[in-house]
Length: 288
Image (cartoon, rainbow, N blue to C red):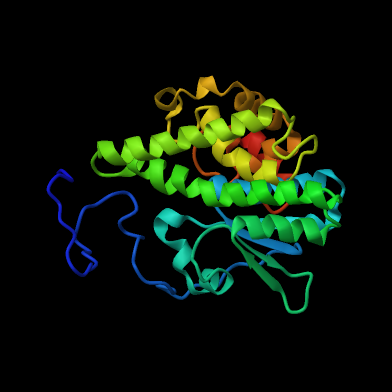
């Protein structure tokens, strides 16, 4: 199949029997639930419904970092939402996130419980909930963090839905699309590399929510674990990004957060659901 000679129709219509790819059974042009299913609720204040995609990892890293700081109120249950099977379209999940995307969080420490969706919003909510954790007190420094956080939210769709889709998932290769998005992703990596040439962390000398948001996407890409595109994009060229990615990878909370809701890769890297800190030890023993 080729994209050559395609002329868009005057009015687009959804062809449910059209070109197939791994997301065909869950992609649709309408919102709302497809089936009735309540969400489970565990014992902790925070109930996370997610999957260990880059956007999901942002939140589990943040929760584990908060626990690492001693914030016992950040204890959480992490329930697996298998987006390949359409779990995100269950009525319970849609009530938490009407956009049907992971991650979604419920804070049961409030009355009534508070819902938070969109990964960047969850990071900021958790920061504010715990006294401004991982966000500088100084307004100017805080603005820098917010700017980089919003940079990630605006840039990652070019990496994921753009480059990642056409390079790794599209049913046939389109040279124009891959070239277009590869060029943009390399530009973004250069933006980060220049910033990290002058700063230990993304927004300066402090580890912040901006690092937590950017690392699961661009750190994973730099280390060759996202779309298996490291060689194609020559990610070794971005030495400062690689230095930063390695540094964050060694943080204990990052190591734990990356495991949560993960159901692929080495067995020792997987923790499909997390309901207690001891689950990490159990996962390691089960993989032995």
